[in-house]
Structure formats: structure tokens, C-alpha cells
Amino acid sequence: LKPNAEATKPAAAAPPAAGAGDAENKKGTTMVAEKKISGRIGFKDWMQVAKASNAAVLGFFVLFTSILAPVLQFLVSALLAFWTNTLLKAEEGTGAFDNPVPAILYASSAVFLAVFLFVRGCLCVFYFLKSSRTLHRGMLRTTLRQTMGWFNTTPVGRVLNRF
Image (cartoon, rainbow, N blue to C red; front, side, top):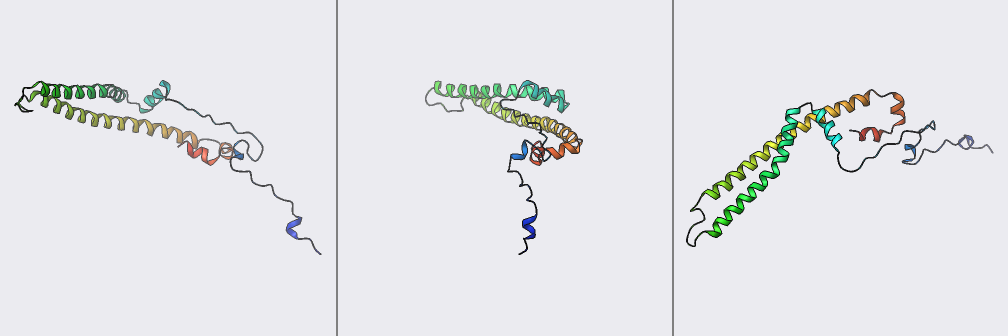
């Protein structure tokens, strides 16, 4: 009897289990452990976004409108309360629009708030798109300039996760 040709060949090493290759590559050298950050975005992170946008005036307007938006929302609510209080204090038999000033104040402030929030949204979109475009180009540039050794030792999922 002749032995089976397949049985006489030395067995190849089994591929590592999923996740087992994260700590070591095939040569046995250890990869750098990835940092995991959790929590809130800090002031340093916001400053990196601001630097990436390269638009200080636009950033100031985004910050200013972000502070002013809750104030205007409170003002609209206060004007609604003022209008309802004038209706409660009005004498019976008078209509809701006999004194149109509170209604006009409330309606105009609500329209102003809607326009203001729309403008604020547009400012935020322009500002953060500009920032993200700059940050993404920088990440892509540094990733493409890595050595082949870095690509050989870094899992594809980790490279793709950066984007």
C-alpha cells in the first residue's frame, strides 16, 4: 500500500481565529494597541475643528447663534405667555384679537425664530462641512503616505474605520 500523497505533506498552520491577529501579525511582531476614547468632546477637540475650518468669522457666528438660539426660544415662549395672560385678563365679551399687539408680537417672534434657526442650520452646515473636508483630506493624506509595513500590520477594518 502506498501512503496518500496528501497525508505525507506537513500540515499547514491553521489561520488564526477572528480577532486573534489583532495582537500579532504573521512574523510575531506586536502591533500597536489602538486607543479607545470615550466621553464628551473636549475643548481641545473643538479647537481642532475650528482650526480645520480655517474660517474664524464663520465659527464666531456659529458660536454666537448657538448661544442666541435658546434665548430666542425662551423669548417666544414668554411672548406666548404674555398673549395668553392678556386674553385671561380681558373682559368678557371682547374678542381674542381686539388688542392685536400681543398676537402680532408672538407671531412675528415665532417667524423670526424660524428664520433664525434656518440661518443657524445653514451656518452650521457650511462650517462643519468645511472642517470635515479639511480633516478628512488630512487623514487620507497621512494614511496614503504610510509605509507598506504599516499596511501589512494594520487590519483593513482598522484602516477603514478611520474614515
